[in-house]
Length: 315
Image 1 (tube, rainbow, N blue to C red):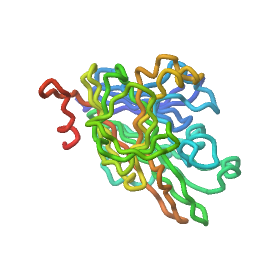
Image 2 (image 1 turned 180 degrees about the vertical axis):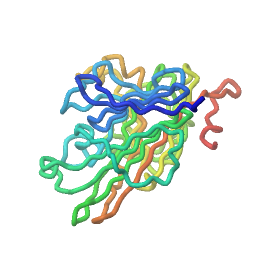
Image 3 (image 1 turned 90 degrees about the horizontal axis):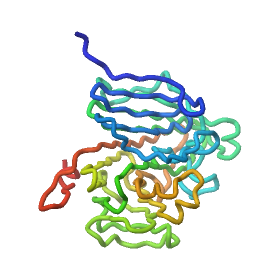
């Protein structure tokens, strides 16, 4: 009997927008819309959704999709003259039929390559020619990997900020803790980017949070006590210039002010993002930058009645 192989399917999604579904043999899957190059779903082998997508998300250009993994480029947040988070998340990407070679083996992995190039309208608001290649990979164990390659195809240098704006699905935000950012400095966006040092042994949540952590490790963990699940985030290519930016939850008041976000949905989501924000990335003509995010979800282990992420962080 022939060995089963992962599947890559192209179909129509909400409002007729084209999407790609990657499926692994054991049952894990991920869903990517060409609109925004946007991952909207990531399910484990049991079919459980691991990403948060708002029930009020608007799948209609030019509105960005609320939830999943938006790509923030060439600007994160309001760090520049463009609209919030740049324009990559509300452009239609193309499937890249001739991607450059990748050093990692792709056997038993389901993947799709996307590409974005600026339109004439884009060049009017951000006058730099580029090629943004994005590979989305689903490993046999259900791990999700996003690899971005941004090449300067212009004659002059340009600078940009960037983030994988990942929305995680959690049981209850009050039952969640983030480990790996203890003792680090952060900029608090709720206090005009004033700089503080994290004091707790882990980050927990009881009100609105909007923080940029500086000089972060390559690996951190999000522990969901109720689901007994730990998310592990690993980043490459986002070193000193790249931070785990942002740790964000809008909480009750801000949630009610967003038209594409349910009033109580803040309880079931947390954004933790790998980003290059504090210091922009600059590319000379012909240069390429590569940044990778790898996500995995593992059962949490207990020790002395507490969840123990250290094995996960060190493993």
